[in-house]
Length: 529
Image (cartoon, rainbow, N blue to C red; front, top):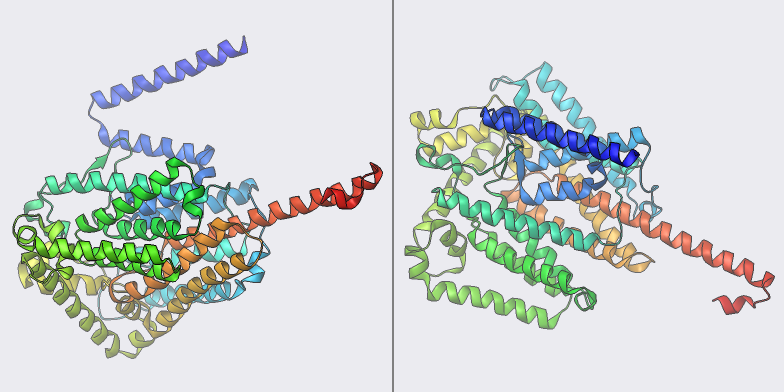
């Protein structure tokens, strides 16, 4: 009887929901529909999906999915917000999956905690000073300041709280297969998105520069979301280093299922192809560098030779067909291959123009940083946003590019962005925390390798130490802040270490019980070993 009542109730809910959905679509109320979808998704997360937070966060980071509701935030920002919400939920529900591991004491994680705390204190003071006593170099807007400070300090807040509080993820023993599956899905989505964009006329440089707004984003229905235009430039090299690092681990590939073998090779292949169609000038070189460094550090002679062959083949094919690539292929394909070609094409002009723009922006940022003692020491935060297209019509493309980015403190490189927004004090503190992150991953790898921790903890720690170490160099000259990806991997390592320690304690307890029971059963203690 109860089962029939439950079934009738469920069917009634489905019918009402379907009718409401059909009525909303029939009236073309798509904005309302997207809000309903977002509310439904939020309710599902609060009730059940929060248990899969780390998988959702990695999907957001890798895929570049972002919501569009009158404001535009990056997938990294949504990921950090979700991590904060998850921390609040497990605290209120008292459902933290694992206790704080002893692993943290062994890797001396306290140093990362202290420097993160110092950076957060500086961030609060910097915001207060620039809000109460604004620098007279430009006009300020609270919205722009909040967005800028959240970009820089929100990941540090989550990192700090995750290190000092009972904060962990519910995980099993299939972390690596899950990461590879998320990478595979994200690559497929971004290939489809890239194909759609280029069919719309996207040229591979900047969606803001396309004439007359002819390029339209692909929107995911119901939740009004879209995929980032430049996501493939970052995703493809990450996919290459992850998949190739796992393949380099001795004996790992042979022990995996056929499904995981196929996924790993697919992620590597899609990552290499994605680098070539990403439109990023350095995506191909970065992917090839990752392959070479990983094979060299793992001392895999065969894989080193294979990596050299892949690199040589790409260079050879690119130069043999340089005429075809430069004249007939789309710019987004020709652009990433210019650095490995002797005969350059028109795509190289776009790279040189971009480099010229960024070089000018870098110089102007350093000059402004040095002009005033306050900016030199503490920075001047960010000014009210300028309208790019309107300014371009007045001063031209290059000057508008420099003025807009300088005004917002986004200098397309971490070093000048830090200096102009937070001065030398904030810059030094931020780089110390960044270096402490690299140290955290490296110490995690060393301890996991030396002591009784799982293989996947050791592999992921090594991979993160390598990618973050290379990442800080790339970010300094052509990148931005660390974000949700590094933070979620810190929490994953914490969770895996706690899981491994708990499993070890349980095995020790079972062995002790077996030894205590052996004399009572008349069994010699040595026979239970």
